Image (tube, rainbow, N blue to C red; front, side):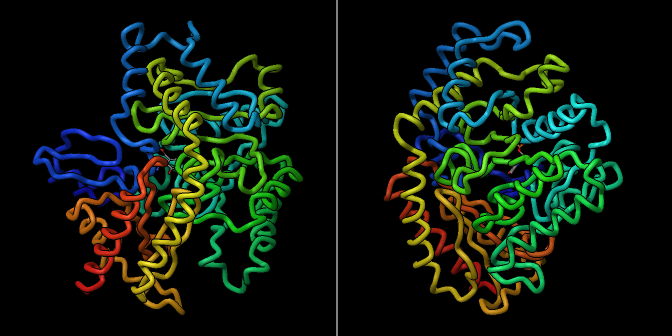
Amino acid sequence: MARGGGSGFGLQDLSRIARAQGSYLYDETGKAYLDGSGGPAVFCIGHANAEVNAAICRQLDSIAYAYRYLFTSSALESLTEIVHRISGHCFKDILYCADGSEAVESALKVALQYHAARGLMTKRRFIARQRSWHGNTLGALSVSGFAARRRAFEGSLLDVAFVSPANAYRMPEGCTADTLVSHLAAELEQTILTLGPDNVAAFVFEPIVGAAGGVVPAPPGYAAAVQAVCAKHDVLLIADEVMCGAGRSGTWCALEHDGVVPDLMSVAKGLAGGYIPLGATLVSAKVAAPIVSEHGAYMTGHTFSGHTAACAAGLAVQTIIERDGLVERARSKGAAFQQALRGSLSKFDEVGDVRGRGFFIGVELVTDRATRAPFAPDRGLSFDIGQRAFADGLICYPCSGNVDGAAGDTVILAPPYNASDAELEEIDVKLSRAVGAALASK
Ligand code: PMP
C-alpha cells in the first residue's frame, strides 16, 4: 500500500479499488476496508451516498459546468447560502476552487490584495508555524513547516518566517501549561516586530494541525491570543481549516470552538466530502470591503472555480450534514470514541497521547511516556501500523516527523461523521491490533 500521508510517494503495488458503500471500500479481490480516516480526512458522509450521487447526476444531465465568470448557477448559489448559514454568517464572500492547496493559495493572495487595495504595498511577508501543512502549490508549500515535503523545492519558496507549533504535548523549552499561550503570542509578536509590522501581510495557521502534527488542537486561548496580536499590528489572521474544518472537529468551523472568527479561512476536503474536488476560501467583510471598492473583484480564480457539478456535490453533502445533525454527531460520538480509544490503547506503554476533537483524532507513539521521546525515524513505526491496519482491512492515516521534522510517529483517525457505533468499534479493535503487532515486531 501507499505509505499514507505522502503526496506522490509509494504508488507502486497498490490494491485496485472496485467500489465503496458507506464507510467501506472494496478492492477488486472483494476485500473490504473500513475507512477509519476518510482517506486523509475527506469522506465525511461515507462513500456512494445515493442522494449525493443523484444530485450530481441531475446536475450533469442539465449542465456539468458553466464558466463561473459568465454564469452563476442555482447549485453555486444554494451551496453559498448553506455554507454561510452553517458557518454562522461570519464571512462575506466565498471563493470556490478545486482543492485545499488552491484554497490556501487564494487566501494568501487575497491577503496580499487586501493590503494592496489599501495602498500598503510593503505588507508582503507571511508568518506561519513549524510542523504545519498547507498544501503543495508553491505559495501553500512556502507557508508549510514540513521539512520532508519542502526539501526538493528549497531555494524557490517564498521567504516565510516560522514560529513555534502550539502543541501542549510538546511545549517549547521552559514553558508550562500556564505560560504556553502567552509565550507563543509573545513569540508571534516579536516575529512581527522583527520583520516590521509594515512588512507583514498575514499569519497562517491550522486551528487543529493535521498531517504535520498528528492532530494537534491549539491550547485553549491560543487562537484568541494570536488574533489579538495580529489585529494590533494590522496583520491578517488566516485559518487553514482544509483538514479540521467543515464539521470534522465537531463545530463547522474548527475555530468556533475557540470563539474566534478569522479574517480568511480555507476549507476543502469535507466540503464536498470527496464526491467531486471542491475547495473554498471564505473572506470576512473586513477583507472584502477595500478589495471590492478599490479593485472591483478578487484577483484569484481558476478555470474550474465554482464548477457547477462540484457545487451540486457540495450542496448535497452539506444539506445532508445540516439536515441529519452530523456536526453535532461528530462532536458527541467523537468524544465517546476518543474515550474508548484511550481505554483500549492504554495497555500499550508506547501510546503517549490520544487527542483531538470530534471525529479528528490523533494517536502519538513514544518510546517512553515520561520523557515523550520519539522512536527512531528509520523504524517507520507509524507506517508499519498503517500497513498492518490496511492488511487487516482498516484505513488509517499514519504520519511521521511531528517531533522535529524527521522523528515522531502519529496515526490519524477521521471516520465519516455518520459512522455507526459498530464501525467505530471495529476501528478501535483493528487499530489496537495493528499497534500491538507493530510494537511487537521491534
Ligand atoms: N491545508 C491542510 C491543513 C491540509 O491538510 C491539506 C491537505 N492535506 C492542504 C491544505 C492541501 O489540500 P489539497 O491536498 O487538497 O491540495
